Image (tube, rainbow, N blue to C red):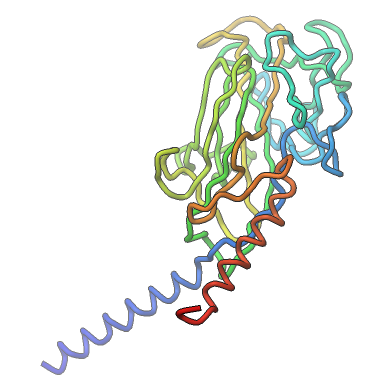
Length: 294
């Protein structure tokens, strides 16, 4: 009997330790900063076409069967597509967001000049050596109590278009070459033939009418990755090596984010979100501290 009681006590203590450890490794979000539309400069205004985006980077590309990462021909800071070269079939820029494209983009399908605002990149088909993918990334920060995964409900909405197709991930697992390890990462959303229309997507760590649990947010630095595949509207392999338009447009309409179901008001672009969420977090903290009946 004593051994049974000791075993039960040990099991209970172990469970308590595991619960305490997991709670210490989880946090509650109170503030978010660093969310930006595509095509902005370092002060939060629209970047000049042909210059680099201040917040979005192409961290990895696969072109012609070759991997690119760091600062290279097809990876590095994304470029803002110039109004002189933007594809006529694309969704138009908004008053606060612009199309961006990967380094190496040219002003023409053949010849032309690279990295001056053109949008012509390699990519034909969805597989084979002539296919091309470009992995765009934006970093943002979540502040809160505790550490590790965020355990209260956080949702970030965005509106997205891309040429030709896209897949979105939040904090995915990466391979050693910088590509996404898809079998260990959660796909938040995707679309094909996405250049002449936009889609709304909710990145969130819970399930509701807007969508499923598709994001593991953490206290600290978080990353939104958008994998853009330039297919030239070809499925499967292709023998073509022709350059064709490719790019990414991300902005937001409606409430930028919610915390525990309460919308955080939008003020212009994503940038002012930090102040709004911070005030919301202070209000929740103050209400918790208020005595019962106040």
